[in-house]
Image (cartoon, rainbow, N blue to C red; front, side, top):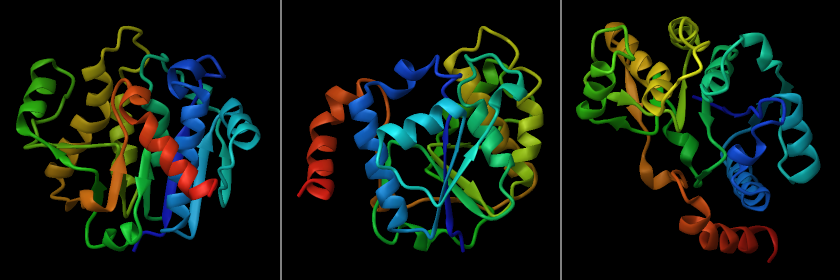
Length: 236
């Protein structure tokens, strides 16, 4: 049974705040809702962040973590266009079962009850068409998987496969011309291929147990919903 939820906040030493946060007020409310929901499901809620990320979380939000880990992501030596590489590094640091969620995920009660009986837990399995696109663009160096493990919510019983996947990713992340499908490919395509090669059990999570406010134009799409939900929980 997984009893640890983890978050990553990489800010590129504060240089990527505007891109990552969308708007400070929106991100604050979204993060507070996410972390609040995490505490309703898990005893252990941990943050992995660079110094600027930790300063922001502790000074400008009411997010409470059972443990905050300050990570020097600079030691990884990667181009900032590979924005998910720090999160991949966070996976490799886990020595106990875990689920990693993004700050735009709000979990409902009993979300954690489903985290058992598999090697890997994922938000969803993307369709074969997505796998084919990555393969055709030579992002993956492994046999094409039948589908893609989605990384919006991602975790597992062991960090071994994530360490192995990191080795593939480390070979390309010094390039400065990464496109969206390259970035997602190093995390989702190769992980999916490795999981199939190893005959690992992959469990998609029940979408009725969480809400993921992802994508572009978040404020336009979700601003009113987040404001109302935040007001109901924290200001009523």
